[in-house]
Image (cartoon, rainbow, N blue to C red; front, side):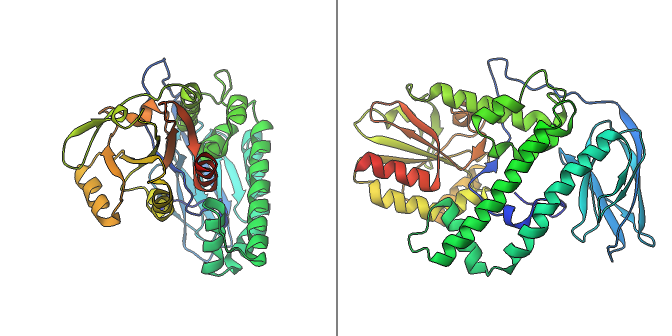
Length: 388
C-alpha cells in the first residue's frame, strides 16, 4: 500500500499491485508476542550533498514509518538533524530519485545521495553499500519498465498473478525479463541479510521483504538470538513467521471453526458449510484492500466455473467498519456467500494464521485444511486438478 510520503528505493517494476497486502494483527496465545527493544533517544546529524534541483530533502523514520520533515538544500548541501531512538532506520530523499536509509547513531554521517559515497561508522558504511548494490539493479530495471506501455505492464501483471491464456511471444519475453530482475533483487536482499547477521541491518530487509520469504528462509533469518531479533522493525516479520507456523500446523487437520456475521445481521459458523461432500474455499479480504478488489474478476471466473461442481465459496471480510463492508458488497456484486469476522470478534484470520490479504483457504469435503497459501495461477491449477 503506497503512501505519498514514502520515498523508496524499490524499483518501479517492484511497486506493482500484487496479491499480498500487509495486515497488522495482534497475535494471541502460545506466548507468541513481540517485545521491541526501543533504545534511548539520541541527537544525530547527517550532512550530505545532492545534484537535485529541488529546494529540500525529505527525512523521516521509515521502519516503522514516522513523520516526514523537510530540510533545505543550499548550493547542493543539506543538513538533517534531530532526535530519534538509537538504531532507528531513517530515510532521506531529494525528490529526484536519490534516496537512502540510515541508522540513527551518535557518529556523524556525511553522504553523497547520488553516488553513495559515505563517511561515518563502519555499520553505516555497510548499510549504504548494501543499498547501492540494490540501486545498480534498479538503474537498469526502472528505465526498462518505464519504456513499456501501460498495456504491456498490465499484461505482465496478469501473467504474474493469474496467467494470460493469449500471451504472445513478446509478452513471454517481457515477463521473463521482469522475473529475472525480481529474482536478481531478491537474491541480493538475501545476500545483504546473510552478510550482516552480526548487526541490525537485517531488520530493515526483513521489515520490507518478509512477504517474499519462504518458510526455510524465515527459519534461517528470524531467530530469537539474532542481534536484530527485537529491533522494532521486526514486529511484522515475527508475526508473519508465527502465522506461517500456525498455517503449517493446521494443514491436513480439521479446519478451525469460527463465527461470523452475514449482511442481514445473523451469525453463522464455518462448520455450517463443511462436511457436506463439497470443497469449501474461503477468500479473506477487506473493503480497503486494493489487491483484494483487483482479484475479484479472477475469483468470479473461478466461482462461475466451479460453483455447480462441488465448490462452496465464502468471502470472509476482516472489515471493522460494517458500513464499509456492506457498501463494498453492493459495489462489487460478489455472487458468493458473504461473512464478516473482524479482529476481536471470532478473529478467523488469527485462527488461520493470516497475516496478509487477500488470502485463500481451501478445505476438503471431509472438513480438513488442504492449503493456506494458494492464489492466482496456483489456485486455478489446484482447482482444475481437483475437479478433473
